[in-house]
Length: 115
Length: 116
Image (tube, rainbow over all chains, first blue to last red; front, top):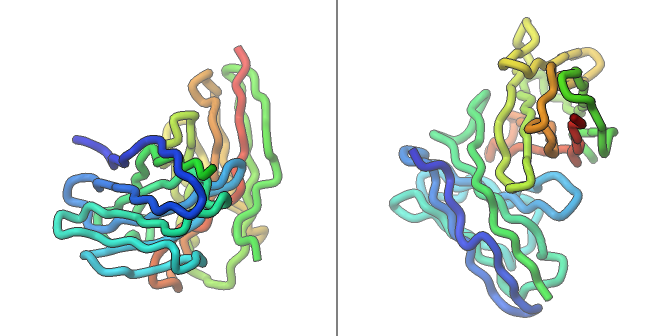
């Protein structure tokens, strides 16, 4: 079975531009979460979507938005890019909401560089 | 406030030896879960082991074991019989059930380099 897939793997943008990152969860998983990992740090929670509804949002500005589609895939959008948005963006899926001991399965991420 | 603290930025270990990675956490919720993930250079976060706050025994998964000391709020990962393929970043993370989003809060990570 395919794991969590993310596209593109690498992306270079300039300040002020907009970017869309895509994620396909493991088949049968209904929850998708997005994390930002700045170089040298641990991942920081951005969003969680479950059954196509936003269920949680981390401490990120409104320039960050996301959505989940009927097939449970997800997109993360970032507007008005800043240099500080350069990071590895990780998508994680889980069967249900990810409570208790339910583990998250992560993709390999999209490396975003903002110049 | 930092919820997960990993004080060792980098460690070297000889092949076939054991290594312990430190993790301390901060929460006032009596119910929580602790995870360890491995991140090789490919970027993917790989689940290693889970410990629930009410679990009576320390978790083990193959060569990975968790030294859970609840009163000290520590959850150290022990990797036994290190292999070259264990070279990676290791992250400790916590899930607090009080949050609606069930997010994981990660530490800053520890880089492990296994020497032949």
